[in-house]
Length: 362
Image (tube, rainbow, N blue to C red; front, side, top):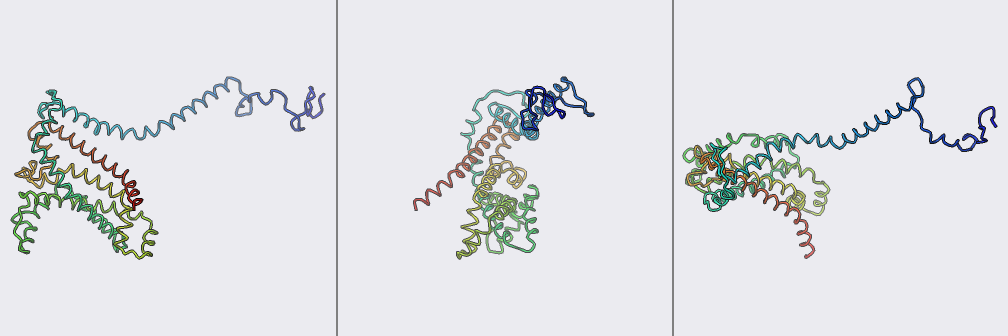
């Protein structure tokens, strides 16, 4: 039966508007896309549209996955070309007997270059000098940086000017700094010996004496890097919550006790970071002693009293033309840095556990 308003079909089914069910197959029948003027498209157009949407969705997924790798790919390409390849090639060269003027004539030597280093007194002297000068430059440098940062953390008039002044030594070239300090530490006309003379102290031969020469070179390193580390400490100090200082002040803690019990513990990760970076820089120390020693600076003085590992590597490779031994020294330095980084990681991981264990024992 068919009504005048087509609400009931010939099979007697009630329309959805009247509470009845929709005709069978009406819900599952796919809709055909219509054209811009409302005309109904064909089945072939629907299939093409679905394929186009599927391709677009696939491209979107690939774009989401591959875009981050594409953005960071230039860094890895440059690192592979200028970081990884030289490292691997240096390791390969260290296993050969190679002269600087005949790079194509390489003879397999195995670990002979490394074995010779173990019996080389100059290598151990350079390693010891690197260690002593690293301690003499790193410890006062970081202590001074910590104190300067603590002072700058207070409200000072013209604090921005102080911060810029701290970066001035870092921006100064190594050659200029070494030249100035060489004049200051001159034996006959140096300002340091002139000042010591006014205090009744005999002049010091800053270039020839073992410990004095190392102290003079360490002063150059301290002057150049103290401000840089001070700004790192200052940035970390400004991130410490002021509530901690207010609580310490309410408990009656002085400025010094606040610094020891609040500032230093909160800066522990930053201090560890600067220690690692400064130690790496001390291991690679080259420019300052090289320029301080003058024309024969690569020897580290007449008695090799301030020759570092970097200078000994330069002497072997570019003075004695033994590129294989120089490459072996470079890899020893690299392995030392890996050991230092591993020690820093162990200290960072085990430090909190040790402190917790010590507190529980109390």
